[in-house]
Length: 559
Image (cartoon, rainbow, N blue to C red):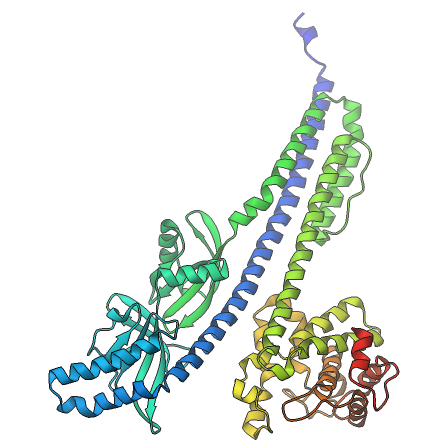
């Protein structure tokens, strides 16, 4: 009786092999899918952090520039300078009461200045860097008569970091001049504390850590994560990943002020868990269903499933090795479970492809934002980058470039002048002719732009356009003096489009030239300053253009 209740050994072996094979295949599928999804999500988050923090750094530098402009204006306060000048002249011969009255006058004028700038403290100092008066929320941190010592920063010769008692301040220095003679200094001090860290956290949507001399001054991390960050080697690194309180973070140093650094940190595990949770649950349910099916099917059904499972595994492995996530696996029709698994995988790959498309759209938006920020510096060049991009795409189309190459030209043209961020406003917006030194400064913008793009991996394809769009066929261009076909085609296209828009746009010192005049000038310089085939493509892209045609003749066609 007992022997008859046991299944035949062949059936047991068949069911064991069938279940084991199916389990192994499912584990391979899970491992391949989740490994690739994890890598793609992790890389995407790190790239987004670098892009976001790169823009944050540019915004922070711009904010400091604006604050310096305000400070320079406030430093011209004649009443404040007169009060300081009077103190310097009369204090040595005055009694303590008189000196206190003179300081009170300086403090009163300083309070007016403090009310007009966003600083935690505004401090007036004499030529020996002795504190004479202070105003603002943290004026009490600057004791009168103390000598202020700055640790130099890297952003400007007179800026730095000051340690005052238990407080650390980021200091911007503005000289106070009377008749071109310096009589003292004005400090605009921002306290490096939790309040500043929280403001930056809200601005960047990332955790913030402020470190000075290896000591953590302030952070928006949790207490345990803060302790782990302090104990790690992260405060000495410009960027990397670090595990804090059991959670992986990507971090990036966005501001460096001497020994003081400001870091932005973004959690990798949190968004990864949110993205992977539903996917993992779907795969687990699919695996359980497939396992139960394998236990109840016969040996013949197990054999019939072996081949389609093998095909599915091979297709998944091929997709994983080629990273071709846009493709879809065909349903085999051999079983409902296999088709469900295949459809789930196809849906997963479709969601990843959609995420990559959204990331690409974000990249494009970031590029447009950079171009718009650059154009906004000068009202006479507003929209220049967009117009150059439109003209460049039209030329590329007439030259028969493939869609991918046209896209590189389009975005590269938007970025072609990004290096002008580093050119001073008084040079960039000068209404008259430039001096030789000013022209040399302008000529540095391709190199500056290339330096900016090299730090952002997803912009590498546009690097040659930004760096080489001022090279000429005759070798007299800059920055490298390339000749003829040594200049990449994309850079040649943007060179012609840039020149065309410059001539057909109004400037402070001249009117816009008619499109026909601009085209004739391009033809005149073809072969020396411009490549003839690019000028010819532009002419073809301007249908019906004559010498008297307005600029809108082109904009109406391509707009």
